[in-house]
Amino acid sequence: MVEKYDLVIVGGGISGAALLYTVSKFTDIERVALLEKEAEIASINSHHTNNSQTLHFGDIETNYTREKAEEVNEGAQLLAGYLEREDPDREFHSKRSKMVLAVGKEEADELRRRYTEEGFADLYPKLRPIDREEIAEIEPNVVDGRDPDTELYALQTPDGYVVDYGETAKSFVEAARKEAGVDVYTDSEVKRLDETDDGFIVESEAGWFEADATVVAAGSHSLQVAKEMGYGEDMSLLPVAGSFFLADDLLNGKVYTLQMQKLPFAAIHGDADVHDDSITRFGPTAKLVPELERGRISTVEDFLDVFGLNADSFLSYGNVLADRVLLPYVLKNLVYDVPEVGKRSFLPHVQKVVPSVGLDDIERAKGYGGVRPQIVDTDGKTLDMGEAKITGEDIIFNITPSPGASTCLKNAMRDTEQVLEFLNGAFEFDEEAFREATIGNFPREERPIAADD
Image 1 (cartoon, rainbow, N blue to C red):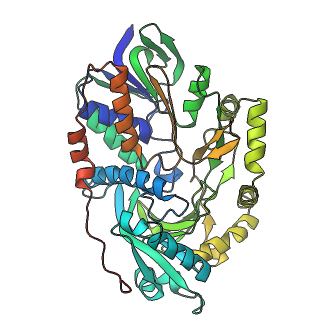
Image 2 (cartoon, rainbow, N blue to C red; image 1 turned 45 degrees about the horizontal axis):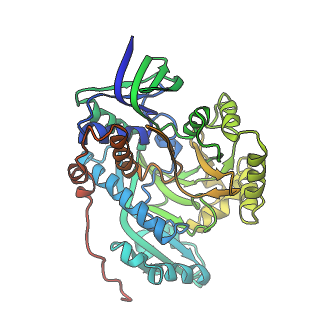
Image 3 (tube, rainbow, N blue to C red; image 1 turned 135 degrees about the vertical axis):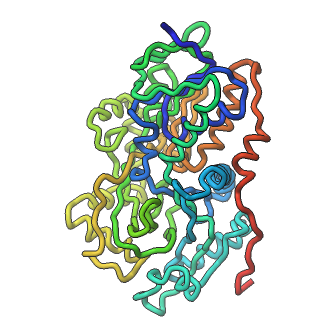
């Protein structure tokens, strides 16, 4: 028997779950199914041990341009508003101070320019500059033991959301399941996805499904499915595995360091775990791996499908990795996995945040870290920063590296609008109600007056 749906969503991570929530709660689409290959929703990259647990607004991410920060900011506010409304008891998120720390005059001057001359002060009313004395009040361990002659400067905000994206995804699915016509299938890996004259036919471990429209939100696997269907031939992936080092309770909130503009990877930062204040996580590291899921050898073959094994892919990888900024970074990160040597090499990054930390104070976290796919443009032979979306005829493929989780609801809103076009305007999206339930709950306030204003 074939089940028929208006929309089938493939992938039950934070992105697929956000789309299911948006479509089921704020449109009148009648029948929607979500297929997830794992036994539980959001058990791979969205699981809280496999990502940095950060809600990225773009305020302290110094590798973001002003344009990208503005785009990310709205998406983060949508999710923050949802969390404020749906998780008032802070069961799967918490809110702490966060700052980006500049160490030394050169970094301090760069951060001041970003704040005052590049428009970040106007974009983020709650972001404020603080000096050594106030840094010490908020984060004593950042200042203790540091050379008093070293200039310290930071941009700080109270909007430091620490998020369990796995539990957030489950909350999306739980809300969606309350609506009529919504079905969620776990343990349901998709075996085939084919176009038909009337839409799509999906073969999964849960059975056969027909859909008028389909959205594939399966992370790195989205590009694999796209290529199987003839899309995304000008793309490849650079899978980056992130890991963390753990220490005792050292920080009250999130402390980022300045990032390199050319790197799409997060700079080393320290923050408390969303479920355990007694742990401080430092990371992430960034190691290239030939697999689409961390520690799953079976996904090496999937990576080869995505890579393409053609001249354009090899030339693109060669061009990307030959970059004089990226190559040393990649090689350095390989060292962090070497026992003892890796910890010793990583220690200076931790000490930039907390100077008093010693070698015996940190340990490599076991079972932490996921894979973040970075998009490679095989036509331009370049590494692209940001998310990738392939839109075909009645189908969308989403590949969502960081900050895909932070902008999951904004992506879901856009995809919902596209799906309605696929369905020939037969249904409607109540965007006003969607915004009221999400960004409408985001706490706002005017920018505080800093001492030097």
